Image (cartoon, rainbow, N blue to C red; front, side):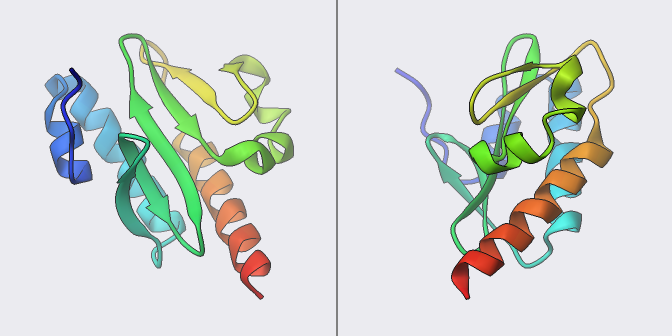
Length: 119
């Protein structure tokens, strides 16, 4: 049975030091791009919430999964061309630099999108 985490800190603490460092960088990047967003655990993974779910991220054996919802995927399709992706997700391999600048751009885009939806 999977471990149930209540906070992002608990989630991150389950990984190796190397992966923890990457997850903390992703987390800080999202926080900086959307400072008003709050942290949560949804779908058993770290989630940032701002007028609804903003972005999710998770660590796997060989990659970091990033989930900006389908709208975020469509907008950044060209930037994602180097990565394995799904309808609402993209995989950043652990053996390559994580594109933090891209994560920041996507998070800001999603924050703007969610605030416009709220209006």
